[in-house]
Amino acid sequence: MNQRTTKYVTFGEYVKQALYSAKYENDTSLGKIPCVVGEVPQLTGCYTQGESFEEARENLREAIELWVTITLQRNEELPILNGYTIIRPRTSRSPQRKKAFA
Image 1 (spheres, one colour):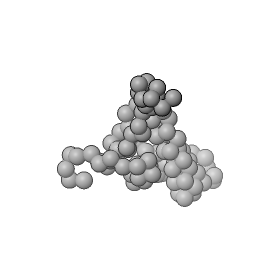
Image 2 (spheres, helix red, strand yellow; image 1 turned 90 degrees about the horizontal axis):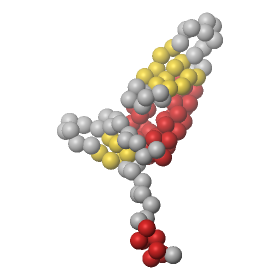
Image 3 (cartoon, helix red, strand yellow; image 1 turned 45 degrees about the vertical axis):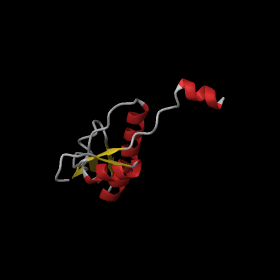
Image 4 (spheres, one colour; image 1 turned 180 degrees about the horizontal axis):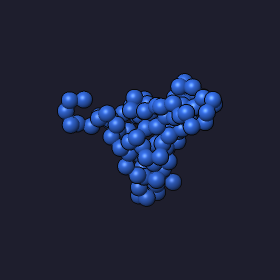
């Protein structure tokens, strides 16, 4: 995005943007055992591995979904990825509104 505006997107679109930001590399430290490591640098601690690029990417998609879910549950800020952030779920109704529906 050319402007410094943030676009709000759905959970699924945010995961897609995280996958666009992902970095992959072959890990040769295991000798003959194939290993591809994938990570999203903007999501601290969000990385995984697989025997192939495809497996590492699928595992990373699952790790991103879990990372985002936990971050939202903790009510923490999500980083902006490629100019995108997630639409925050609505908070629970105020105590006054709860009484009206009780």
